[in-house]
Picture 1 (tube, rainbow, N blue to C red):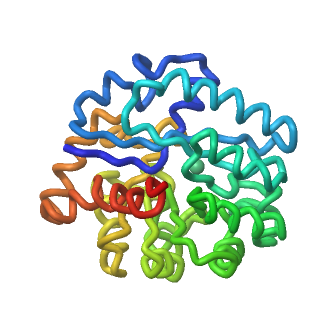
Picture 2: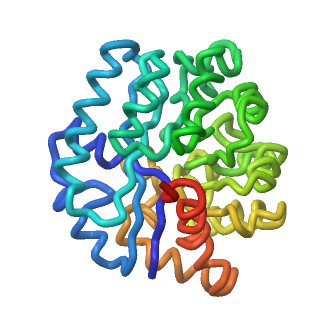
Amino acid sequence: MKFFDLHCDTITECYVKNKKLKTNDLDISLEKAECIDKWNQVFAIWMPDELRGKEAEDYYCKVLEKFKEECKDVKGAILAVEGGSALAGKLENVEKLYRDGVKIITLTWNKENELASGCFSDEDKGLTSFGKEAVKEMAKSGIVPDVSHLGEKGFYDLCEATDFPFIASHSDVYALENHPRNLKDEQIKIIIERKGLIGLNFYNKFLGEGNSVQKLLDHAKHILLLGGTDVLALGSDFDGCTINEEIKGIEKMPALYNAFYSYFGRTLADKIFFENADNYFKRQVFTK
Ligand SMILES: [Zn+2]
């Protein structure tokens, strides 16, 4: 089977805990991924909310080095930054990150940064004026803005600032699990209209109580019923959150694929597990 995953924190975990990507006890290792026939994996450099300015830039550079070292022979490895604080408030850093190979920038983590308020900021101020400039610059360079973790006001500010088909790399459905990290139907519809992507998150808190395989099917079905046939994808959040045993680890993906296959049929299962994300990246990211 093929697996295109829009988000994991594995490289950051490898950096923080000084582990190797090839063999480890994390959710993703190259060895465990051998059960996947074709694998495209977004690896995020996760930016802690405690770091801003120069400290954030330095941290970004260190994890970037780890990514380069661990992923140099990994076909299908895609680099992302989770937290626009890596830009340190400098517009010229968008171009720098682009040259570093960054394909996606999640605008915020949970708290406020130079670009916007996150979904757990004390006050939702939306995008800052720097944030609006930065997303325009990103759209020009071909770096995808990612709204997972962003406050609701920032979502609509982003829609106004650019017509780029942005993504939500790792978020679930608010109508099914009332959590500030999940997407409301109105937001899902906008992402569908723009032909962006929504990656379903495996975090048990976002999915809700119960068997996570069934929960993922429920969240997927909700987005499909809103018209998301071409935008629905997966954003596991492996090594970044608490995941129930039945879907914890990349080695569980063939069984998860089989569950989607049985429930939705082959065409949809293939779209969700690989083709939607692959088509999006061919259209929006790998054009230059
Ligand atoms: Zn995250």
